[in-house]
Image (cartoon, rainbow, N blue to C red; front, top):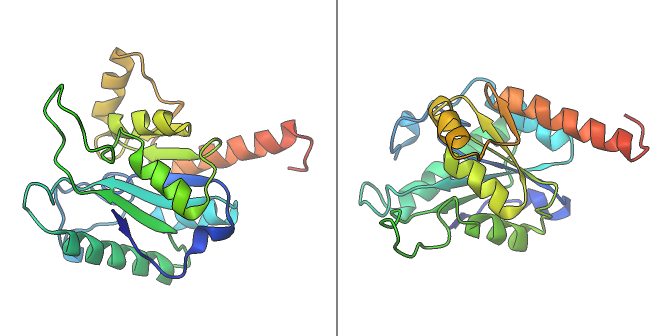
Length: 208
C-alpha cells in the first residue's frame, strides 16, 4: 500500500534512496500506532535533507504486519505516515512517498504476498508510480530483509547498526549475504552514499 502525499516530490528525480522506517528513521518500539509512540532519531531530518540536495529521492518502504495481526488498521498506518511526512516537511526535508506492506509474513514454504520485504513488490511499485530508476538506487535499513530487498530490486544495500542492525549483521555474514556497506546509523549511511556519488562523478569525468 502507498500512503499518498502531496505534492509528489519525486516526479522529476530518477534514483531513490529507499529507507526502512522503524529502526532506521526512528527507534523500533514494536508496533507504533500513534505519533506519540514514534521517537525519531535526531539525525534523521538532516540525513534526508542531504539526500534531497544530492538529487536522490527519499522513499520509505516498510513492513507493517501489525495490520495483518489486528493491532491496528490501515487507516492508522496512513495517519501515522501523514504525521511522519508533516514532520519531515516542516524540517525542510520532505519524503517523496511511503509504501508499506500490511500482511503477516507467510509460514516457511508458503507463498508470500509479494509486497513484504524482502520481496521486491514495494520497490517495483514505487519505481512504476514515481518514475524511479532502481539500478543505481540505494536501500538503507536495519534488518536482513532490508538488505535482501535492496539486492532484489538491484539497489545498493546498506545496513545500519541502529534498531536490529547489530543482530542482523552476523545473520547476514553467516549466510554470506553481507550488505554492500555497513554504517553506524542513517547519518553515516548518507555519508557513504554521498561518497559513492562523488566517486561515480569523478570516474565519469564530472567535476567533484
